Amino acid sequence: REFISAGAGAGMAAAFGAPVGGVLFVLEETASAWSPLLTWRIFTAALVATVVLALLKAGEEGGDIGMSGLLSWGTSEGAEKIRQGFYTAASSLDSPIYTFELVFYVLVGAVGGVMGGLFNRAMALIAYVRPRGRVLKLA
Figure 1: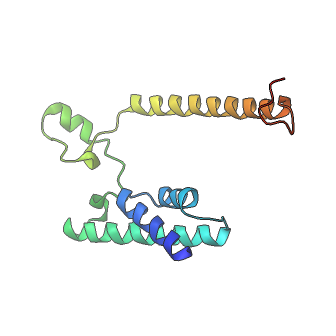
Figure 2: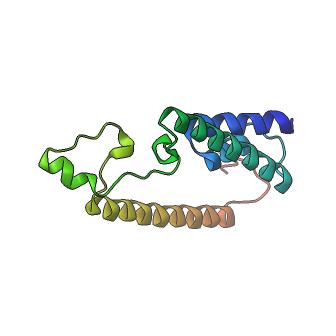
Figure 3: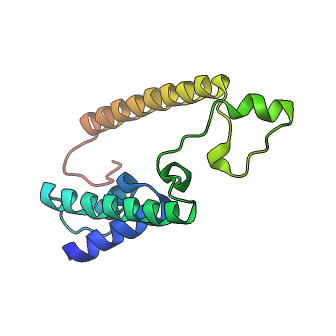
C-alpha cells in the first residue's frame, strides 16, 4: 500500500509540477491510515519525480532548469518589453508580473482566511449547541 501511495503521489506531482499537491492528494484519497513516516515517503517520491521531470525537460531546453517550469514564477522585466512590442511571451513561464495582481492575491487570501475562521467558529458553535446522542431528532 505504501508503494502505491508513493507512486500515486509521484505521478500527481510530476503531472502537475506540485510535490506538496501530490502528497495532499494521496493522503486524502488513497492512504488508508496517516503516519508521519508515510507522509515523508510520499513527499520524497513526489519531490524526486518532480526534479527528475524538470531535469528531463531542461535537457530539451538546452540545460536551463529555469525553463523547465520548476523554478520559474514569471518575469518582471517582460512587462515593459511586451508593452513596447519588442517581446511576446512564448509561454506562461514568460508572463509578466504586475504589482496590482499581488495586491489582489493578498486580498483573496485574507478574505479566504477570514471566511475559513468564521466557518470553523460556526462548526464549533453547532457542535456545542446540537444535542448529543440524538441523530436528527426533531421533537
